[in-house]
Length: 336
Image (cartoon, rainbow, N blue to C red; front, top):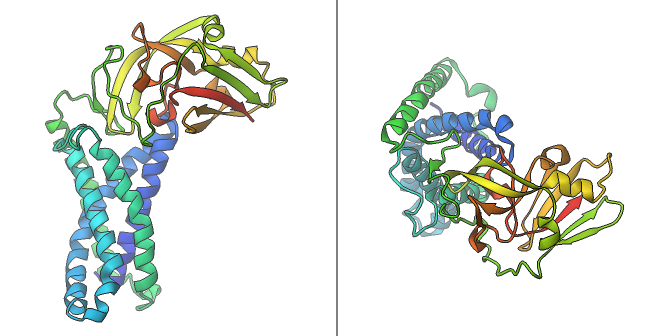
């Protein structure tokens, strides 16, 4: 396959993987599932294209490294290659159950996989700006032979995707992996499920006696509630799965107060369409109001008060959303 076509194909796959990965994170489950499958399929295709890229990279390094003046020109490509290989290796190792949630001293390898993938994007842009190829013209790249090779790569990716999934299922210890790739970390165990914080926030020390929850923005008048006033609202409870982007999931019984009841109490107008839930740490996530009304401001899990690491005194529970959108240590709701 022509060198330039291989490079462009590799670039397209990396961008496709980044896009499908991000969309698979941020969208609700009913909308995100096609991107979970697309991400796996593109990952298999990337592995195949990397086999074509290796001799190109080897030849390029052999030509440039002997010259001291040219060694810096390969730096963007080398760094991008290391990030790419690291991200792909961790993604494959996670899929095949070769690493676990606590492999990196309690920090999930899946998070490292994502972070390397995000770091790859600026490195890839740097590399492309320095080494972008303009020959041969794009129109002449896909001849009959190249088209046949592309079709072969596509067929191998289509076959390889279910084979990797089959191998992953064989290696899954309890066969309880979700379509997101998350592994079961125990359920109905109250606070005995993993504590992970994606953004490296320190766990705040909060006192329920002084904690306050504010509802501000597009409301007739801002509302502030104490923990006791919040607890006086009608209690709600349901079972919901917390699917963390750290690569684990856990189903628990959550109890607290309906966000819908709180918004009704605050007199949120009918024309309001969106609200952001904000943590005391500054982490925030916006939701359509129709969805947020069905969410829960949880104070207890499995009958136990939330521990500080799990969001004490109040965390958001939004079924169908990923764990980083279940905002911990809720401080306020901003209605737009």
